[in-house]
Length: 201
Ligand code: HEC
Ligand code: HEC
Image (tube, rainbow, N blue to C red; front, side, top):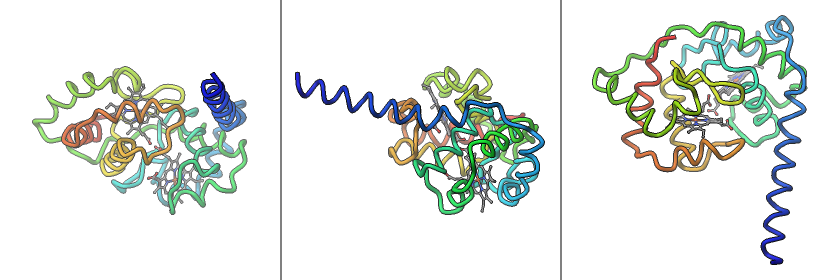
């Protein structure tokens, strides 16, 4: 009984902390023009309009605003860490994060640079259905609300993230993505990434 109670209060404290982290950042819709002005520093790495040309750096264009704001929050609060990205988010206010998120959501995602191997054009969609990727990320994998748009995302970035989720090393706001990737075989990750990175926008 005592054990159950303490486990329960830890879980509640954890939830409250998560809500505290996420909700203030999402309370106001961002200002696209203010975000565009602030995005000058971001496009040096993330590419013009947030369309990355580096396979290891994620594209931000057409990412749902809520997903972007949440990601920035995770970096700022050091739940998610990266030597290049963390310093960029460290000093952003909630308003600045919302503005940047609104701006990058408004940009069109460019056609992918990656070309999927012919065999994976058939196997990819089968695996995406089998592992419920389409159930959460949507039939076209474009994401919704806090669930990221992964369609035509950069190849090496996708690979690194899926491997990190599977190894429980990538920040995960609600644990859903970590559970979704624990059952993934390494060879399925290779196929899924080759397929998703080549999807036309
Ligand atoms: C020096 C290069 C660099 C700059 C400048 C930079 N970023 Fe990043 N950013 C990265 C890298 C690298 C990653 C991938 C981190 C990882 O692997 O977890 C990243 C990841 C992100 C993510 C997470 C994307 C996702 O799909 O999960 C967001 C959002 C983001 N950056 C927004 C921004 C914004 C907004 C700015 C400008 C204020 C910015 N970045 C400036 C390098 C940079
Ligand atoms: C139960 C819902 C759910 C399922 C199923 C799911 N995802 Fe996710 N996925 C999420 C959420 C939520 C996030 C955001 C996690 C975060 O950043 O805290 C995410 C994040 C990701 C990311 C990181 C994107 C980025 O820009 O950083 C990738 C890649 C990804 N998912 C791929 C997949 C693939 C491939 C599958 C199928 C094998 C899958 N997901 C299944 C909910 C899901």
